[in-house]
Image (cartoon, rainbow, N blue to C red; front, side, top):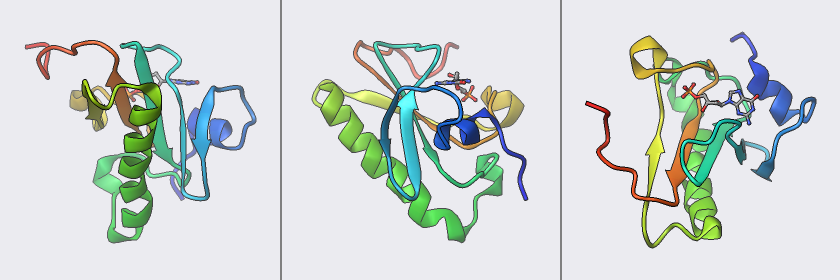
Length: 116
Ligand code: DGP
């Protein structure tokens, strides 16, 4: 069993978070430290630590991250202008929380994909 993180507590509503959407597979909530006017995290409810741990079993939940991202972007009014979906993996990717998550960022021009 993969180790739980603070995100499992958010999924179970044991700690506060601004949850925008939840179903049996995924949860979407606002990032505590937003890097853009819209910054939403979309996560599977099951603990998958990193992209390196993904298997075919996870395809349904991970596919849903995209359908929820599309809907959240539309609801936030940023679909037309555009946005960025980002998944960090391990140290070089800058991953801080070891429960796989998709960042939905938008609401302003985001600039080049990488700082350098
Ligand atoms: P990453 O670097 O890809 O692992 O991003 C982790 C993100 O999770 C980071 O943008 C901040 C966010 N985050 C960390 N702890 C919490 C929390 O307790 N609540 C919420 N809403 N976001 C959190």
